[in-house]
Length: 147
Length: 147
DNA sequence: CCAGTCCGTTCCGAAAAGGAACTATCTTGG
DNA sequence: CCAAGATAGTTCCTTTTCGGAACGGACTGG
Image (cartoon, rainbow over all chains, first blue to last red; front, side):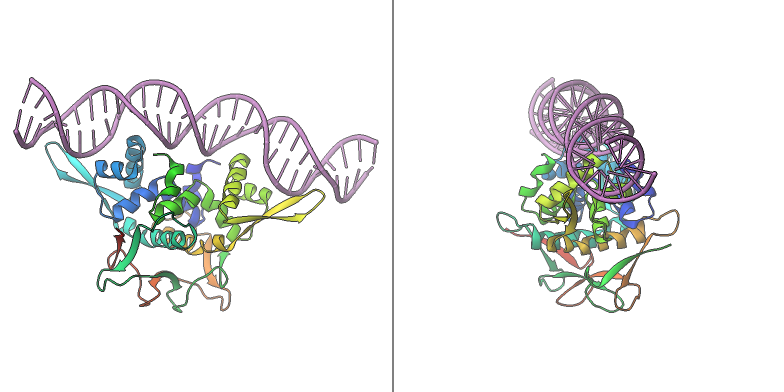
């Protein structure tokens, strides 16, 4: 099976990955969440090939994760901003950060800390069940395949 | 920059993606969480090339996400199981499922529902702050770059 | 006019993915 | 004994994608 057929799968993991499962895509989105909006800036920060960056931005726009918006005319130039759909990816990124901090050690100190905008306090992300308020772990939650 | 240099970055997103940001890797892990442990089974379910599957399993084992365990001798055969580090990825997968369910519509009905093992009730995943118990969103949490 | 900025595109060699066949090691059934 | 089946890969070859660097177009400021 080819990678780009994933979007037609019924499994939500497959559908999700068809959008963000590409190499570099989540790195691009990380920069978007950090407020980077311009092509040049992303390219410089990520070290990604211009070619690939242009391709990823195009795909993310086509998928409705980013939107391209003119920030000047003459010459016409666009910047990239997260749509609501894109912003909704925040928990995925945060979960990934949480995992990496705990299980993929860095050489030096880690580069990012999550803090509350309001209080400035450090935030500790945990995935919980909205109904019971309890943490979700592999042990007490299971996935049912719908018939 | 090359993709495999990501693991040396100080950003946790980059480090995380150096492990699971590869094409197919999260699909393989999805199957692991669903209890699939054998090469043949994964290959059949995923439709992935045998070549690529072998490669991903090798890398995941090398990264300590999966562990290879003999389930019979004569002939010696192994199966793949999640390590603790691997199981810790559950929130990432769940966050992805949540996003895809909400924003990447399937054609037919969705194939997976998360339920509590205890009560059988449907689980609604939300990322919260362990300290305050409040939901984490892009709007009220921000990432600080550590100097 | 020239340098600088910004957002791409083009070109080419290298790496990775897709597809199918092949190997190896047993077990089971006839 | 032989053929067929199960399991876990490997090998070979073609197609796709990536990495690196140069090039192009549309301006601005000096």
